[in-house]
Each structure stands twice: as C-alpha cells, then as structure tokens.
Length: 78
Image 1 (cartoon, rainbow, N blue to C red):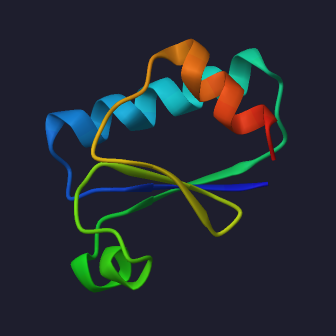
Image 2 (tube, helix red, strand yellow):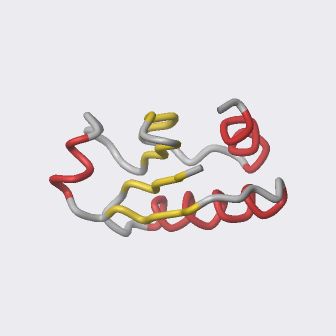
Image 3 (cartoon, rainbow, N blue to C red):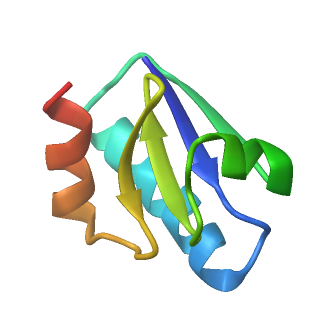
C-alpha cells in the first residue's frame, strides 16, 4: 500500500501526516508513506485544496484532517 500526504507543509498538512502514520501503525499496515509538497505534483491528482490523502493513487480526502478513527476506516477500505 502506498499512502501519499499532499500538502505544502502547513500545520494541517503536518497533522494529517502525523495522524496517518499513527493510524497505519495502530493497524499494523505494511505501507509506504510519502509526503508530496510539489505544487505541480499535487495538482496532477486533481487536488485544489490541501491537505489531501491519496491511497494507492486514489484521492480519499481533500481539504480536511480526518479524526484518527476516520483515517483507520479510510486505510482499511482499500
């Protein structure tokens, strides 16, 4: 599983990254987590607001920081 956190480094982007790592650890997921900060790359996903969460190439969340339990649901629905 590949998880990408899209964002330029604002506090919401950092929080999404931290929560996503925590959710993946709690679920014992075998995954690669990448932080994408390049605007062109972010826009290539069709994302116009950050932060955003991409799982295996599919945009799952845009413009908000989900709660830890929501993130766990998102990561296990794949």
